[in-house]
Image 1 (cartoon, protein in one colour):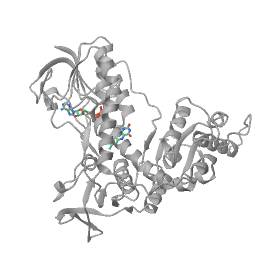
Image 2 (tube, rainbow, N blue to C red):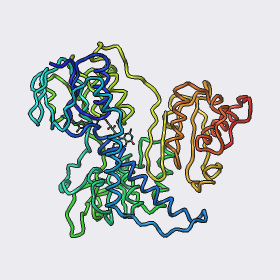
Image 3 (cartoon, rainbow, N blue to C red):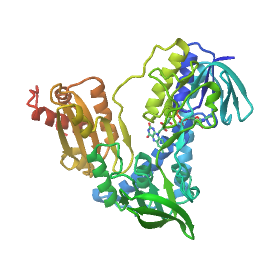
Image 4 (cartoon, protein in one colour):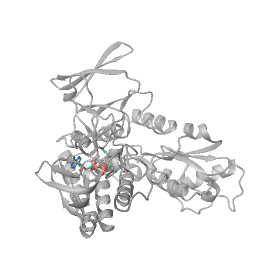
Length: 468
Ligand SMILES: Cc1cc2nc3c(=O)[nH]c(=O)nc-3n(C[C@H](O)[C@H](O)[C@H](O)COP(=O)(O)OP(=O)(O)OC[C@H]3O[C@@H](n4cnc5c(N)ncnc54)[C@H](O)[C@@H]3O)c2cc1C
């Protein structure tokens, strides 16, 4: 009998197991596949590697502007996929998580197949293990939501797209959120003809409106056919060259064809195999496991962490969840989830990122001031030939606190990390403006926007703010 059994070996599960072990609980972790979960094997690591290759292609095309002569770059996709596999192996072998989990005394069962509850204290796995435990922490993550229209089985998910042996000539991408935008951007860079279908009025609907608009414009300029408000999908059919999507808009039937259709319309929790009812664990209307702020489920001995709870589905949040859930599972409910600024970004081309409130959300509750600096007027972006994009900062006029930061363009994700630190440290915008950030840097752009706001608000600065 274990004190704590963790189900799922992604970032949430690994940190939960490590923390439970560190707190002295006799802990086991069981996971269907490889240690590391989606983050290492099918999510950020492989996707970033492909996105990096897309950047290298772009940079290689720019190199002539700097007087360096090279031939037009050509992509060998199978060699790139070998590099992706190599990176995944390398990241895994250099990860300290495995040794830390071992040193915490956790017994790890990898490649155990799907685990399911047999009763409130017993879990069995497809590989034939039977594990009994006092407490459980459920970290099974999620998978791509599928469409339920005729012919949906002919479509692919982002995982299938990464696994292709060659770049398809054309791709229909359904869903203009973070995953769909990444698939569209990466394969566009690799030479596929992309149609990006978004059911709502704008792609990246959870981003600030300015960000959605700028990325949509940049996508169009790079050759992606962006189709917002496209209507509803009726069916898919096989064609000699690939797939046809039939859809209707305001009652008018339309269709389009491509070699491949990739569906990226959201995420569903991996709960169907767990037989949660045998443990008394309830799911919410969205299909995710219901948890409170201590990550307790409806069953007193069961906690849940990571994507399966359906909140911000990102690695840093999964890691925090794992820590909180394990602390509460071992010590009793004592640690609440932190409500803190969470930077979110994506490595599309152009890159985009955010932290805090969008401008429209901020206006609902605050008297705000905003400033926006376009990348065509900042020194570093001009040096690097990366003048597309902007940095926008939103502050509360009364408290001068930073409410949100939204960036499109080179190093957008890195710039918002700095804004997140400023927000977490409760810096006022004039405090941020007076940090002598290095010149000429991308971080310095944020300092300069802070300086613009301080000036707009007539705040006295000890000096005249940054140059970037
Ligand atoms: C294309 C893509 C790109 C992404 N990019 C980023 C990014 O740039 N930055 C970022 O922070 N996040 C990114 N994410 C999200 C990130 O990968 C997830 O938020 C994170 O992996 C969630 O961790 P987790 O531990 O909750 O679940 P997972 O990493 O999904 O791990 C869950 C594990 O549990 C196993 N499992 C499931 N059911 C069972 C069962 N019944 N029994 C046993 N084992 C089971 C699964 O096989 C899996 O190994 C991306 C995701 C995708 C799809």
